[in-house]
Length: 412
Image (tube, rainbow, N blue to C red):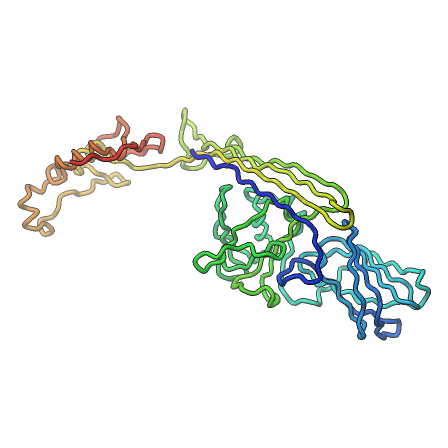
């Protein structure tokens, strides 16, 4: 049995806007061309995108070719407004931007008074024409609702259909997931969290060392192939995680995930007590909570997440220990697992003249314990065997029957 101390993960996220953001950004972009009813481009048109949850606005103006680009937009729901003198105001609602999305929105303005508006809602999802990458987007609803193994976010990568997991240890300690994407080498992916590198280079291998709590993640995007050059340094796909952010309203959650051996079936090698198998002890609790809200309305927000873990578990270990005869140095009655006697007499053709002078190479004398060995064994009893063991066949005992002494051997 062993205990693992709590692993505490705390994430503070705020919304900060700047004119320039580094590459590998997880933010979205809206771009397009503004035209009149005859298809002519409209320069100097004002385009404004408003985040529905936070009220933050991002504005741009079309250039001489009627092109505009709104970049560095946090993921979420938006409404876009386009205005120009001599044309009706255009409003497009219910635009949902996802991680790293390049959203194309071309607008054709109608001639009329600026005070009148044309509002568009409920349009079909647009076809992706700005990028050519092959990706899978895993939304927060999937991350929260699916029974992810041990509440680890990166288990959601398996939903991409192109991921094959090699291992992801079942422990609350800081372990590294090992998987491959789209046939690439395992542990060769690039991983980003909010535009920052989430890897730790070890021996030339970029291992993913950070797996945030489920409640702290808004979306996970898996780029399998044909992605942009900005996502370099990858030989097997890209993982992009976007954390949650506060909004203009206060929100909070509390959660508890637990596992107990009372709900587990005993395994094949489970120990037997009172004639029935008993599953090893397991007490695994993952608990935490989140809170988010505004610091300054429509300007600055906060989000806090806490997660603690407690694990207490036991395991069964099956060992084969020597019989009483073998402990005495007599291997003449050693049997195979099938119950057949193992010949312990050395053939004469394999015996050297030096070995023959040491005595009669019979099973009872050749393997008899020597005084020096007996002295070392008594001074350092590495394994303390049970007092009752079969005399002629190996015995199987559990780890509870073996105790390692703390003292060191004495000199002989």
